[in-house]
Each structure stands twice: as structure tokens, then as C-alpha cells.
Amino acid sequence: MTAIWTRQWTEVCRFDDLEPERGVAALVGGDQVAVFRTHDGAVYAVSNYDPCSGAYVLSRGIVGTRGHAPTVASPMFKDVYDLRTGECFGQPNVMIRTYAVSCTDGIVRVAARDPS
Image 1 (cartoon, rainbow, N blue to C red):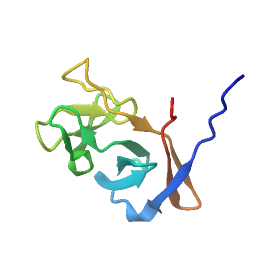
Image 2 (cartoon, one colour; image 1 turned 180 degrees about the vertical axis):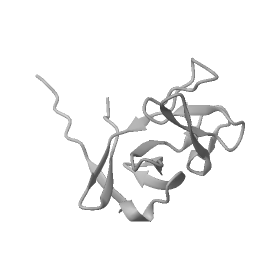
Image 3 (tube, rainbow, N blue to C red; image 1 turned 60 degrees about the vertical axis):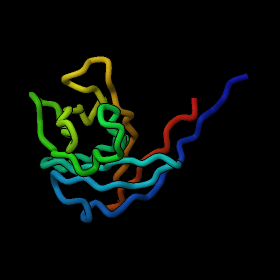
């Protein structure tokens, strides 16, 4: 028997409501998610939880780049995370969860995480 996971999408906001280089917090499938619009118009969603500080603060982080990677720096201890992969640049054993994002008809949607 094969389990089939159907993504559950949550409408978060309109694309125009996202200020470039700023984050917003949203509740998606019971998870606190931080949604970012970068300067090039790309939209990313990651966990709002900063594992290094133990606080839900990443939506208030500082958006930037490291090389070609879009990043967010935690406002607590300034740990920097890759918005595409969730990797922490300063601590290779630390990651944050990433979420699939859809932007159609000007509406930003974030998929709840796979239950597995």
C-alpha cells in the first residue's frame, strides 16, 4: 500500500502585501511560518522558529544574501539561514524547515509540511 500526500495550501497574503526584504509571520497547518519577498521578487517560506535561540522570531530577521543564496539572519544571535534550503551557515548541524510556496493571481500560498 502506498500513502499519497496531497499538499494542503494556505493562502497567506497578496504578493503586493509583502514588502521587499521584509518578513511576515503566518500560521500554516499549525506551524508558525516566516514568509519573505526578496529584492528580485522571489518568495520564500521557512519556519519562524530559530533553533539557536529557541524563539519564534525569524520573520523579524534581516534579509540579505551570501554569495548567490538569499538569507535571513536571526534577530536574536544573528545566525544566518539559507532561505532556499534552511541551512545555517555558521552551524552546519543546524537547519530550519522550508515550505513550498506558490504565487498565482497575486496570491501567496504556502504548503503545509508533509506529515511524514
